[in-house]
Image (cartoon, rainbow, N blue to C red; front, side, top):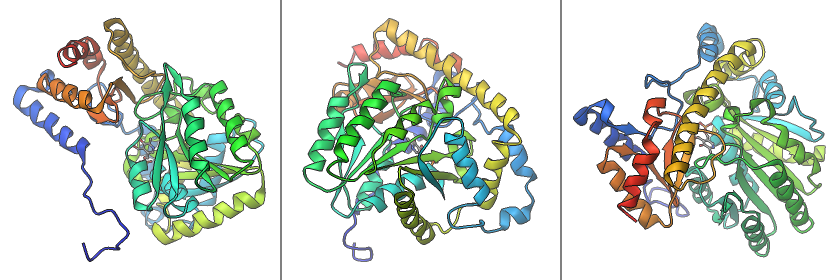
Length: 411
Ligand code: PLP
Protein backbone atom coordinates (compact mmCIF):
# COMPACT_ATOMS: atom_id res chain seq x y z
CA UNK A 1 0.00 0.00 0.00
CA UNK A 2 1.88 3.03 -1.28
CA UNK A 3 -0.27 5.71 0.37
CA UNK A 4 0.55 4.91 3.97
CA UNK A 5 3.91 4.92 5.70
CA UNK A 6 6.24 2.04 4.91
CA UNK A 7 6.80 0.94 8.48
CA UNK A 8 3.25 -0.08 9.21
CA UNK A 9 1.47 -3.42 9.29
CA UNK A 10 -1.23 -3.25 6.61
CA UNK A 11 -3.05 -6.50 7.37
CA UNK A 12 -6.71 -5.64 8.10
CA UNK A 13 -8.01 -6.17 11.63
CA UNK A 14 -9.86 -9.44 11.84
CA UNK A 15 -12.80 -8.41 13.98
CA UNK A 16 -13.71 -11.82 15.31
CA UNK A 17 -15.97 -10.40 18.03
CA UNK A 18 -18.14 -8.42 15.63
CA UNK A 19 -18.69 -11.45 13.37
CA UNK A 20 -19.92 -13.55 16.30
CA UNK A 21 -22.09 -10.74 17.67
CA UNK A 22 -23.77 -10.62 14.24
CA UNK A 23 -24.25 -14.38 14.20
CA UNK A 24 -25.83 -14.28 17.65
CA UNK A 25 -28.18 -11.48 16.55
CA UNK A 26 -29.25 -13.47 13.49
CA UNK A 27 -29.79 -16.61 15.56
CA UNK A 28 -32.09 -14.67 17.91
CA UNK A 29 -34.25 -13.63 14.95
CA UNK A 30 -34.24 -17.12 13.44
CA UNK A 31 -34.75 -19.28 16.55
CA UNK A 32 -36.22 -16.83 19.08
CA UNK A 33 -34.40 -14.91 21.80
CA UNK A 34 -35.07 -17.40 24.56
CA UNK A 35 -33.30 -20.23 22.68
CA UNK A 36 -30.04 -18.29 22.23
CA UNK A 37 -27.32 -17.68 24.82
CA UNK A 38 -25.45 -14.56 23.77
CA UNK A 39 -22.32 -14.39 25.92
CA UNK A 40 -20.42 -12.18 23.48
CA UNK A 41 -21.15 -8.66 24.70
CA UNK A 42 -18.45 -7.17 26.91
CA UNK A 43 -20.51 -4.39 28.51
CA UNK A 44 -22.72 -4.51 31.58
CA UNK A 45 -26.33 -5.51 30.78
CA UNK A 46 -29.30 -5.69 33.12
CA UNK A 47 -31.58 -8.66 33.71
CA UNK A 48 -33.91 -7.50 30.93
CA UNK A 49 -31.13 -7.59 28.36
CA UNK A 50 -30.65 -3.83 28.23
CA UNK A 51 -27.32 -1.99 28.30
CA UNK A 52 -26.79 -0.46 31.74
CA UNK A 53 -26.24 3.31 31.74
CA UNK A 54 -26.16 4.44 35.38
CA UNK A 55 -28.87 6.99 36.28
CA UNK A 56 -26.43 8.35 38.87
CA UNK A 57 -23.97 9.01 36.04
CA UNK A 58 -26.21 10.12 33.20
CA UNK A 59 -28.88 12.18 35.00
CA UNK A 60 -26.22 14.69 36.11
CA UNK A 61 -24.58 14.51 32.68
CA UNK A 62 -27.86 15.46 31.04
CA UNK A 63 -28.06 18.51 33.31
CA UNK A 64 -24.72 19.87 32.17
CA UNK A 65 -25.22 23.12 30.19
CA UNK A 66 -24.53 22.84 26.50
CA UNK A 67 -21.84 25.50 26.73
CA UNK A 68 -19.88 23.29 29.12
CA UNK A 69 -20.21 20.41 26.68
CA UNK A 70 -19.16 22.67 23.83
CA UNK A 71 -16.10 24.05 25.55
CA UNK A 72 -12.51 22.85 25.21
CA UNK A 73 -11.03 21.33 28.33
CA UNK A 74 -9.16 23.59 30.73
CA UNK A 75 -5.83 22.03 29.84
CA UNK A 76 -4.23 19.48 27.52
CA UNK A 77 -3.46 17.37 30.57
CA UNK A 78 -7.11 17.49 31.67
CA UNK A 79 -9.24 19.74 33.84
CA UNK A 80 -7.44 20.39 37.14
CA UNK A 81 -10.42 19.25 39.23
CA UNK A 82 -10.63 16.03 37.21
CA UNK A 83 -6.92 15.31 37.59
CA UNK A 84 -7.18 15.76 41.35
CA UNK A 85 -10.29 13.67 41.59
CA UNK A 86 -8.84 10.77 39.59
CA UNK A 87 -5.88 10.68 41.97
CA UNK A 88 -8.24 10.83 44.91
CA UNK A 89 -10.47 8.10 43.46
CA UNK A 90 -7.54 5.74 42.99
CA UNK A 91 -5.12 6.46 45.82
CA UNK A 92 -7.04 8.84 48.12
CA UNK A 93 -8.06 6.15 50.58
CA UNK A 94 -4.75 4.34 50.82
CA UNK A 95 -1.41 5.30 52.22
CA UNK A 96 0.37 6.25 49.00
CA UNK A 97 3.70 7.94 49.59
CA UNK A 98 4.73 8.26 45.95
CA UNK A 99 4.95 11.40 43.84
CA UNK A 100 2.21 11.41 41.26
CA UNK A 101 0.62 13.13 38.30
CA UNK A 102 -2.54 12.51 36.26
CA UNK A 103 -2.98 12.97 32.51
CA UNK A 104 -6.53 12.79 31.15
CA UNK A 105 -6.85 10.33 28.26
CA UNK A 106 -9.58 9.08 25.92
CA UNK A 107 -10.61 6.05 27.98
CA UNK A 108 -8.21 3.53 29.39
CA UNK A 109 -7.16 2.92 25.78
CA UNK A 110 -5.47 6.32 25.60
CA UNK A 111 -3.57 5.73 28.84
CA UNK A 112 -2.37 2.27 27.80
CA UNK A 113 -1.45 3.50 24.35
CA UNK A 114 0.65 6.51 25.37
CA UNK A 115 2.52 4.38 27.88
CA UNK A 116 3.32 1.63 25.40
CA UNK A 117 4.20 3.95 22.54
CA UNK A 118 6.02 6.70 24.47
CA UNK A 119 8.10 4.56 26.81
CA UNK A 120 9.70 2.27 24.23
CA UNK A 121 11.62 2.91 21.03
CA UNK A 122 10.77 1.23 17.71
CA UNK A 123 11.88 -2.38 17.57
CA UNK A 124 11.90 -2.82 21.35
CA UNK A 125 9.73 -5.33 23.17
CA UNK A 126 6.75 -4.77 25.43
CA UNK A 127 5.83 -7.54 27.86
CA UNK A 128 2.18 -8.66 27.83
CA UNK A 129 0.08 -11.32 29.52
CA UNK A 130 -0.32 -14.40 27.29
CA UNK A 131 -4.10 -14.22 27.57
CA UNK A 132 -5.03 -10.58 27.18
CA UNK A 133 -7.19 -7.80 25.82
CA UNK A 134 -6.43 -7.79 22.08
CA UNK A 135 -5.71 -4.08 21.83
CA UNK A 136 -2.34 -4.39 23.62
CA UNK A 137 -0.96 -6.36 20.68
CA UNK A 138 -2.41 -3.90 18.17
CA UNK A 139 -0.95 -0.92 20.03
CA UNK A 140 2.46 -2.58 20.02
CA UNK A 141 2.21 -3.35 16.31
CA UNK A 142 1.20 0.22 15.47
CA UNK A 143 4.18 1.54 17.43
CA UNK A 144 6.49 -0.93 15.64
CA UNK A 145 7.22 -2.77 18.83
CA UNK A 146 7.69 -6.44 19.41
CA UNK A 147 5.86 -8.31 22.15
CA UNK A 148 6.76 -11.10 24.51
CA UNK A 149 4.22 -12.81 26.74
CA UNK A 150 4.33 -14.31 30.19
CA UNK A 151 2.16 -17.31 30.97
CA UNK A 152 -0.48 -16.08 33.37
CA UNK A 153 -1.11 -19.08 35.56
CA UNK A 154 0.64 -21.93 37.21
CA UNK A 155 -2.26 -24.06 38.39
CA UNK A 156 -4.66 -21.60 39.93
CA UNK A 157 -2.11 -18.90 40.76
CA UNK A 158 -0.22 -16.13 39.06
CA UNK A 159 2.79 -17.59 37.28
CA UNK A 160 5.55 -15.57 38.88
CA UNK A 161 8.21 -17.85 37.41
CA UNK A 162 7.10 -17.21 33.85
CA UNK A 163 6.78 -13.50 34.62
CA UNK A 164 10.35 -13.43 35.92
CA UNK A 165 11.76 -15.47 33.04
CA UNK A 166 10.05 -13.28 30.45
CA UNK A 167 11.35 -10.08 32.05
CA UNK A 168 14.86 -11.54 32.30
CA UNK A 169 14.85 -12.56 28.64
CA UNK A 170 13.78 -9.10 27.52
CA UNK A 171 16.23 -7.41 29.85
CA UNK A 172 19.06 -9.39 28.29
CA UNK A 173 18.25 -7.75 24.96
CA UNK A 174 17.21 -4.20 25.72
CA UNK A 175 17.85 -1.51 28.23
CA UNK A 176 14.36 -0.98 29.56
CA UNK A 177 11.36 -2.99 30.70
CA UNK A 178 7.78 -2.02 29.96
CA UNK A 179 5.36 -4.56 31.38
CA UNK A 180 1.57 -4.74 31.28
CA UNK A 181 -0.32 -6.23 34.21
CA UNK A 182 -4.09 -6.06 33.81
CA UNK A 183 -5.29 -6.33 37.39
CA UNK A 184 -7.64 -6.55 39.25
CA UNK A 185 -10.47 -8.26 37.32
CA UNK A 186 -8.22 -9.34 34.46
CA UNK A 187 -9.82 -9.35 31.02
CA UNK A 188 -10.73 -12.07 30.05
CA UNK A 189 -10.07 -14.48 32.94
CA UNK A 190 -11.36 -12.49 35.92
CA UNK A 191 -8.20 -13.14 37.93
CA UNK A 192 -6.92 -10.70 40.56
CA UNK A 193 -3.46 -10.99 42.09
CA UNK A 194 -3.25 -11.44 45.87
CA UNK A 195 -1.36 -8.95 48.01
CA UNK A 196 1.47 -11.48 48.32
CA UNK A 197 1.65 -11.94 44.55
CA UNK A 198 1.88 -8.17 44.10
CA UNK A 199 4.62 -8.06 46.73
CA UNK A 200 6.59 -10.66 44.80
CA UNK A 201 6.11 -8.79 41.54
CA UNK A 202 7.38 -5.53 43.05
CA UNK A 203 10.30 -7.25 44.74
CA UNK A 204 11.34 -8.79 41.43
CA UNK A 205 10.90 -5.55 39.46
CA UNK A 206 13.09 -3.76 42.00
CA UNK A 207 15.77 -6.35 41.26
CA UNK A 208 15.40 -5.75 37.54
CA UNK A 209 15.60 -2.01 38.18
CA UNK A 210 19.15 -2.43 39.44
CA UNK A 211 20.02 -3.06 35.78
CA UNK A 212 17.44 -1.19 33.69
CA UNK A 213 14.64 1.37 34.11
CA UNK A 214 11.30 -0.36 34.62
CA UNK A 215 7.84 0.90 33.66
CA UNK A 216 4.99 -1.10 35.17
CA UNK A 217 1.74 -0.43 33.35
CA UNK A 218 -1.13 -1.51 35.58
CA UNK A 219 -4.35 -1.56 33.55
CA UNK A 220 -7.20 -1.26 36.05
CA UNK A 221 -10.08 -0.85 33.59
CA UNK A 222 -12.46 -3.03 35.66
CA UNK A 223 -11.33 -2.11 39.18
CA UNK A 224 -14.65 -0.64 40.25
CA UNK A 225 -16.26 -4.07 39.77
CA UNK A 226 -13.92 -5.81 42.22
CA UNK A 227 -16.12 -7.68 44.67
CA UNK A 228 -14.48 -6.22 47.78
CA UNK A 229 -14.88 -2.67 46.50
CA UNK A 230 -13.76 -1.04 49.74
CA UNK A 231 -10.36 -2.74 49.57
CA UNK A 232 -9.89 -2.87 45.80
CA UNK A 233 -7.04 -0.31 45.93
CA UNK A 234 -5.21 -1.75 48.94
CA UNK A 235 -2.70 -3.58 46.75
CA UNK A 236 -1.47 -0.23 45.42
CA UNK A 237 0.22 0.36 48.78
CA UNK A 238 2.76 -2.21 47.57
CA UNK A 239 3.85 0.38 45.03
CA UNK A 240 5.34 2.45 47.89
CA UNK A 241 8.18 -0.08 47.82
CA UNK A 242 9.22 0.58 44.20
CA UNK A 243 12.82 1.56 43.70
CA UNK A 244 13.96 4.87 42.22
CA UNK A 245 14.44 3.22 38.84
CA UNK A 246 10.78 2.12 38.61
CA UNK A 247 7.76 4.09 37.46
CA UNK A 248 4.19 2.79 37.70
CA UNK A 249 1.54 4.02 35.27
CA UNK A 250 -2.02 3.18 36.26
CA UNK A 251 -4.42 3.18 33.32
CA UNK A 252 -7.87 4.17 34.56
CA UNK A 253 -11.10 4.08 32.55
CA UNK A 254 -14.41 5.85 33.20
CA UNK A 255 -15.93 3.60 30.52
CA UNK A 256 -16.66 0.78 32.94
CA UNK A 257 -16.63 2.70 36.24
CA UNK A 258 -19.39 5.04 35.03
CA UNK A 259 -20.84 2.79 32.28
CA UNK A 260 -19.90 5.61 29.88
CA UNK A 261 -17.98 3.69 27.22
CA UNK A 262 -18.86 6.20 24.49
CA UNK A 263 -17.81 9.31 26.39
CA UNK A 264 -14.14 8.38 25.99
CA UNK A 265 -12.76 9.53 29.27
CA UNK A 266 -9.96 7.98 31.31
CA UNK A 267 -6.57 8.80 32.76
CA UNK A 268 -2.95 7.79 33.21
CA UNK A 269 -1.81 8.09 36.83
CA UNK A 270 1.98 8.25 36.90
CA UNK A 271 3.63 7.18 40.18
CA UNK A 272 7.29 7.31 41.14
CA UNK A 273 9.70 7.97 44.00
CA UNK A 274 11.03 11.20 42.50
CA UNK A 275 9.24 14.33 41.43
CA UNK A 276 11.65 14.79 38.51
CA UNK A 277 11.00 11.30 37.09
CA UNK A 278 7.24 11.68 37.33
CA UNK A 279 7.49 15.09 35.71
CA UNK A 280 9.69 13.64 32.96
CA UNK A 281 7.04 11.08 32.02
CA UNK A 282 4.29 13.67 32.37
CA UNK A 283 5.99 16.05 29.93
CA UNK A 284 6.17 13.40 27.21
CA UNK A 285 2.65 12.14 27.86
CA UNK A 286 1.34 15.69 27.66
CA UNK A 287 3.01 16.24 24.31
CA UNK A 288 1.72 12.89 23.00
CA UNK A 289 -1.77 13.83 24.20
CA UNK A 290 -1.61 17.22 22.56
CA UNK A 291 -0.34 15.73 19.31
CA UNK A 292 -2.93 12.95 19.07
CA UNK A 293 -6.25 13.80 20.75
CA UNK A 294 -5.51 17.36 21.90
CA UNK A 295 -7.89 17.38 24.83
CA UNK A 296 -10.53 15.25 26.51
CA UNK A 297 -14.28 16.00 26.50
CA UNK A 298 -14.77 18.77 29.04
CA UNK A 299 -18.22 17.62 30.16
CA UNK A 300 -17.13 13.99 30.55
CA UNK A 301 -14.35 15.04 32.93
CA UNK A 302 -16.60 17.40 34.89
CA UNK A 303 -19.22 14.68 35.14
CA UNK A 304 -16.78 12.15 36.61
CA UNK A 305 -15.74 14.73 39.20
CA UNK A 306 -19.34 15.50 40.14
CA UNK A 307 -20.55 11.90 40.21
CA UNK A 308 -17.69 10.65 42.37
CA UNK A 309 -17.93 13.52 44.87
CA UNK A 310 -21.29 15.23 45.24
CA UNK A 311 -23.27 12.30 43.82
CA UNK A 312 -21.14 9.63 45.44
CA UNK A 313 -23.81 8.07 47.67
CA UNK A 314 -26.24 7.62 44.79
CA UNK A 315 -23.51 6.35 42.47
CA UNK A 316 -22.13 3.88 45.00
CA UNK A 317 -25.57 2.59 45.77
CA UNK A 318 -26.40 2.05 42.10
CA UNK A 319 -23.06 0.56 41.14
CA UNK A 320 -22.94 -1.75 44.16
CA UNK A 321 -26.27 -3.20 43.09
CA UNK A 322 -24.73 -4.19 39.77
CA UNK A 323 -21.55 -5.50 41.37
CA UNK A 324 -23.80 -7.74 43.47
CA UNK A 325 -25.64 -8.85 40.36
CA UNK A 326 -22.38 -9.61 38.58
CA UNK A 327 -21.30 -11.69 41.55
CA UNK A 328 -24.57 -13.59 41.54
CA UNK A 329 -24.17 -14.39 37.85
CA UNK A 330 -20.53 -15.40 38.09
CA UNK A 331 -21.14 -17.44 41.27
CA UNK A 332 -23.78 -19.47 39.47
CA UNK A 333 -21.59 -20.04 36.43
CA UNK A 334 -18.35 -20.87 38.26
CA UNK A 335 -20.02 -23.08 40.87
CA UNK A 336 -21.81 -25.08 38.19
CA UNK A 337 -18.65 -25.23 36.10
CA UNK A 338 -16.78 -26.68 39.05
CA UNK A 339 -19.53 -29.27 39.66
CA UNK A 340 -19.67 -30.23 35.99
CA UNK A 341 -15.89 -30.34 35.57
CA UNK A 342 -15.80 -27.53 32.99
CA UNK A 343 -12.21 -26.25 33.17
CA UNK A 344 -12.06 -22.48 33.82
CA UNK A 345 -9.13 -20.18 34.45
CA UNK A 346 -9.06 -19.03 38.07
CA UNK A 347 -11.86 -16.48 38.20
CA UNK A 348 -12.08 -14.13 41.17
CA UNK A 349 -14.11 -11.13 39.95
CA UNK A 350 -14.98 -9.02 36.94
CA UNK A 351 -16.88 -9.06 33.68
CA UNK A 352 -15.68 -12.35 32.14
CA UNK A 353 -15.07 -16.00 32.93
CA UNK A 354 -12.83 -17.91 30.52
CA UNK A 355 -12.89 -21.63 29.75
CA UNK A 356 -9.42 -23.14 29.67
CA UNK A 357 -8.43 -24.67 26.31
CA UNK A 358 -5.46 -26.95 25.68
CA UNK A 359 -4.78 -25.49 22.25
CA UNK A 360 -6.25 -22.95 19.87
CA UNK A 361 -7.26 -25.82 17.55
CA UNK A 362 -9.37 -27.33 20.30
CA UNK A 363 -10.72 -23.85 21.07
CA UNK A 364 -11.83 -23.35 17.44
CA UNK A 365 -13.63 -26.70 17.35
CA UNK A 366 -15.31 -26.03 20.66
CA UNK A 367 -16.35 -22.51 19.69
CA UNK A 368 -18.02 -23.87 16.55
CA UNK A 369 -19.71 -26.70 18.46
CA UNK A 370 -21.09 -24.19 20.98
CA UNK A 371 -22.54 -22.09 18.16
CA UNK A 372 -24.23 -25.17 16.74
CA UNK A 373 -26.04 -25.35 20.10
CA UNK A 374 -26.84 -21.61 19.95
CA UNK A 375 -24.29 -20.63 22.62
CA UNK A 376 -22.30 -17.64 21.36
CA UNK A 377 -18.97 -16.82 23.00
CA UNK A 378 -15.73 -15.05 22.10
CA UNK A 379 -12.48 -16.80 21.25
CA UNK A 380 -9.39 -15.63 23.14
CA UNK A 381 -5.90 -17.07 23.16
CA UNK A 382 -6.19 -20.56 24.70
CA UNK A 383 -9.69 -19.89 25.89
CA UNK A 384 -13.38 -19.26 25.34
CA UNK A 385 -14.64 -16.06 26.94
CA UNK A 386 -18.05 -16.05 28.60
CA UNK A 387 -19.29 -12.51 29.23
CA UNK A 388 -21.21 -12.92 32.50
CA UNK A 389 -21.52 -9.11 32.50
CA UNK A 390 -24.21 -9.33 29.84
CA UNK A 391 -25.85 -12.68 30.67
CA UNK A 392 -28.95 -12.72 32.85
CA UNK A 393 -29.09 -14.92 35.96
CA UNK A 394 -31.47 -17.15 34.07
CA UNK A 395 -29.02 -17.47 31.17
CA UNK A 396 -26.26 -18.39 33.61
CA UNK A 397 -28.26 -21.20 35.21
CA UNK A 398 -27.41 -24.54 33.66
CA UNK A 399 -25.05 -22.99 31.11
CA UNK A 400 -21.82 -24.49 32.46
CA UNK A 401 -23.30 -27.99 32.44
CA UNK A 402 -24.46 -27.56 28.85
CA UNK A 403 -21.05 -26.25 27.87
CA UNK A 404 -19.34 -29.22 29.52
CA UNK A 405 -21.55 -31.68 27.63
CA UNK A 406 -20.63 -29.96 24.37
CA UNK A 407 -16.94 -29.91 25.32
CA UNK A 408 -17.04 -33.68 25.84
CA UNK A 409 -18.09 -34.12 22.22
CA UNK A 410 -15.16 -32.19 20.77
CA UNK A 411 -12.04 -33.17 22.73
N1 PLP B 1 -8.23 -2.38 29.31
C1 PLP B 1 -8.97 -3.47 29.16
C2 PLP B 1 -8.46 -4.75 29.69
C3 PLP B 1 -10.19 -3.41 28.49
O1 PLP B 1 -10.91 -4.52 28.35
C4 PLP B 1 -10.64 -2.17 27.99
C5 PLP B 1 -11.91 -2.09 27.24
O2 PLP B 1 -12.50 -3.02 26.85
C6 PLP B 1 -9.83 -1.06 28.20
C7 PLP B 1 -8.64 -1.19 28.85
C8 PLP B 1 -10.14 0.32 27.72
O3 PLP B 1 -11.40 0.71 27.56
P1 PLP B 1 -11.75 2.24 27.31
O4 PLP B 1 -10.77 2.77 26.35
O5 PLP B 1 -13.14 2.24 26.79
O6 PLP B 1 -11.62 2.91 28.63
